[in-house]
Amino acid sequence: MATVTRTTNSTVTRILGIDPGLRMTGFGVIDVQGQKLRYVASGCIKSDGNQHLPQRLHTLFSGITDIISTYQPHIAVVEQVFSNVNPQSTLLLGQARGAAITALVAQRLPVSEYTALQVKQSVVGHGKAAKQQVAHMVMRLLALPGEPGSDAADALACAICHAHASQGLGQLAAPGRRQRGGRLLALADSELMNRASVRTSTARSHTP
Image (cartoon, rainbow, N blue to C red; front, top):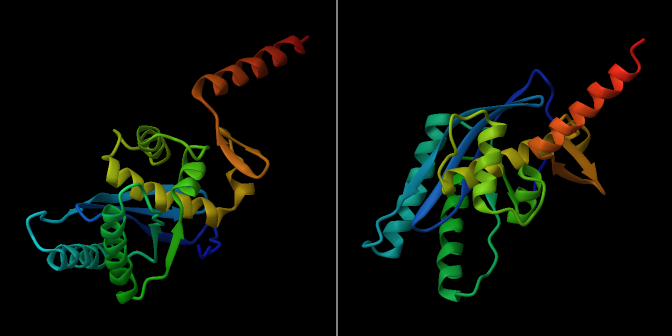
């Protein structure tokens, strides 16, 4: 269940996004001020596959604790996990997610959760977006010089999703985005250019 905090234009909120995984846990930190998003940091916490499970979970817990200490976020966002074809993988992923959430709560951070479908709809515009599409939109929304790695991109997308939720759909209906049935859709560059061309042609036709 996501806890949404409305922000004013003068308030700067730092959000820590977490994409949990036992082998690799992605993290992404952004600042939000009004409708402005600013990239702060991102990366991955890697656990040693040769270690026993308790040690690997401790690595994730310690890594997230260090990230919180370094970047001092105000709120954390974690992607919800659902079962997949492999029950063992689902169990391990759930334990990694539990270690991540425990680390966040231990530092007294409020934690919000979103499904992968919600994150993709918020960032890309539809819930079936591929990972590369998510990474590309994260790069554009945060004005990054290149696409971040997959795990870091997913974590940043979680943070962006919460930022969008705190801003509200009304504020998100900005150039490059439109609403359909309460769902936010991203417009392709070609569609934006076509609309701009139509507006320009219309303006010229009305010019005496």
